[in-house]
Image (tube, rainbow over all chains, first blue to last red; front, side, top):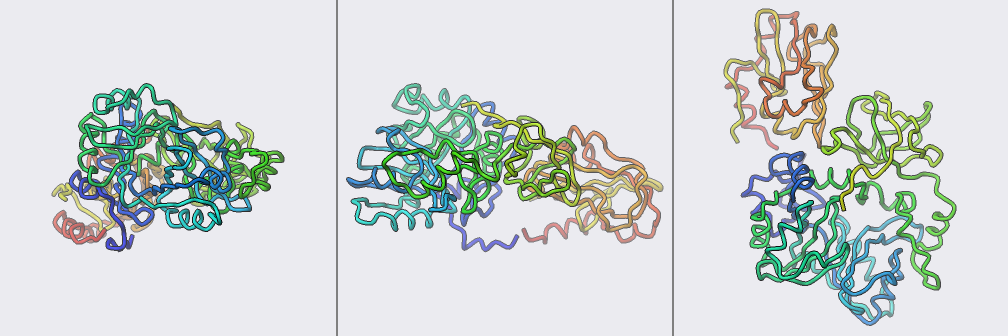
Length: 365
Length: 131
């Protein structure tokens, strides 16, 4: 790998990771920890206790103005009428043809102020798209990505471990809701959201508190977890990864996220026509779960065959430490989506036996 | 970083270790190789009886994030494979030189042994490797 280290950005926790012996890789233009000790150990720690992730490479915007809800209703496929202050919502932002610009979460601070978290690789693209579509609406967008540190605190014991450090009753925060509170007296934005399939939180705060809060969270007994385990955790939970299950050539309906496509009657939004049509009529290809019957590891881009015909490809694959076998997701022709359908997956010039299987592979939220 | 390099073994620049006992060579991947690959999750070993030339792929080693090849350090016939790796591929990480052994070769060209590296020479190579 020829990576120019100087071209990659560093999060406020970069030195902290190095001091901990993390192995760093370049991801979306950022030097991020892929693992500290072992991807599998970190994965298992999150499933059994708790883990802390540096997700500062992701983007964070503030959108403000009288027309912010109208604006978001126009650029997002999900329905903000389902939102209320102190609550967040997951959505895709789509092109006119229904394919995805990014998947993201926005949080309603109040009727005129939203916080939005976007994928690391799409920060500039998203920011530009949003700005380009404001038109005459009263909306101002500020990019806080480099001014704030973001971490995820995830695991079945997350609540129990975090409660002594915060000044709010965590049990009163339901999934997708957020609060502004403190962690050992330092102010944070704390949301009950996550990307692992476990209970937990995603937390954002000013860079000046980065090392202190990270250390406070580690001291609870949670394990530091890198991007390697972040990927294996989200794959078990079957959460989409941009560029894999969704992209600028895959629509949310094809990716199985048809529930994000809302009718929003009387409200126009970008991609509405195409997506509602796909939702009602179906799509030529659809995302499915993959199980390998022969021995091997399913990986992205491997081709999927049925009776000698190319019927699709793997969007994500890997090893599941929880199930102790390989798992994968793939886009296949609609007529083969039935669970139990026998297929072949091409792994390095060999066709291995597999089948369509149920998803998710694991959820504990 | 200090990688283990037992002195009683021979090495290949492709990161295999070789233990020679009479006409049989036991082969696995080195501590350096297992560290580079990360958590090993699957090893595809050859079948007993298969014959390979030196330099060809004998096995595929899959980690969470990557795939590596076991390159035959000597020509010969596969007379043993470590079947434990099917259930415990992580042995390659925890014990690369012992429980993580992969194949046993009845080598056909003893002169090839001269081209294998000493522990010292191998240590030099990994110290100079850029990654």
